[in-house]
Length: 281
Image 1 (cartoon, rainbow, N blue to C red):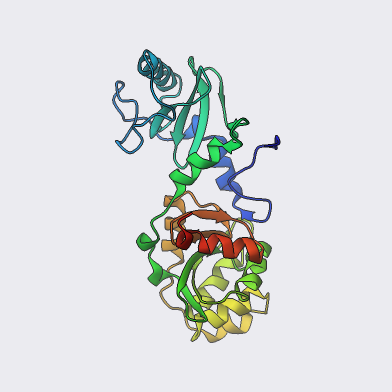
Image 2: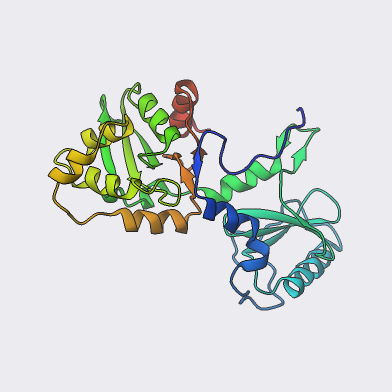
């Protein structure tokens, strides 16, 4: 396994809200006050297990490290503290992200923890677990539904109609067979100020799926906006949903297993991502 530069949650082929980037960078400084009791290391039974098996003395070491972190950063809401395979380095779960710190909590860093002997990206495995979303929990009635072929497979996509990478993915999606795509209209207004009104126009169109396809092709939307009366739009609900799950960029894809992928995947990788749950991957 070769060394690579640290990768962000979003590939280069994605549009990312600048505010989302800023929130990630300043998470340790600006997050809400910690309400957990001082003796509480993890916040839930699910996150109770350490990253590596505990040996004598490590539970105490983890508690000391966690207490030091809480003392230094009392306003940071940490969901769980865990050991890592690297001696003296600990993991804190902050929202849908992980950060690492030493026992004193003076040194805190983000990035990728790689096991070179096993060729594993340990951070990536952890993030996939944290960011998994139960597909059945998604409010699919708030998404534009497009069926290709028999629609047997399922895919959810968070899209900004003015994002060039969402448009690129839109073209690729039209090459798929036998899949139902649920598109959540997710305008990133800070970088695409017209995306909100276009998203509302798509939703209110007589044929939202067709209107979405036109919008993603960059076709003029002024007539569609004028022709379609204002109707109740789910965009605000989608924005809240994205915030809840730590989604800050487009396109973001979710397969039936609840796994995420960010960016405009090429057709072969898109097919593999959609098929992964069916193959037990």
